[in-house]
Picture 1: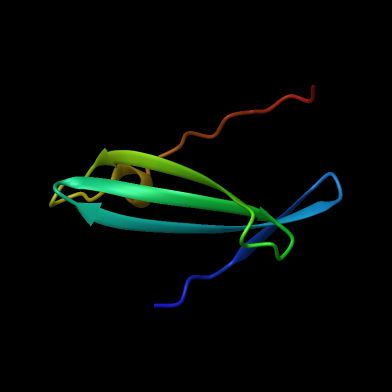
Picture 2: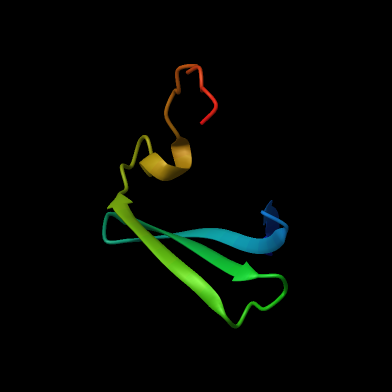
Length: 74
């Protein structure tokens, strides 16, 4: 399965990011890899370790119901 590189622009700088998950010993390890432009070799890696439930899966992958909140400008 090919990983899809996504992009986000923050204050004029374009960043690419990848999100991946793996499962081992009843745990889910999700990885967020962020890099500037196309420089994938110079990346920030963030690992999230959570439990993996056989029925509901990882809480980061299955999501939760969010209630609509009103945001106010700063």
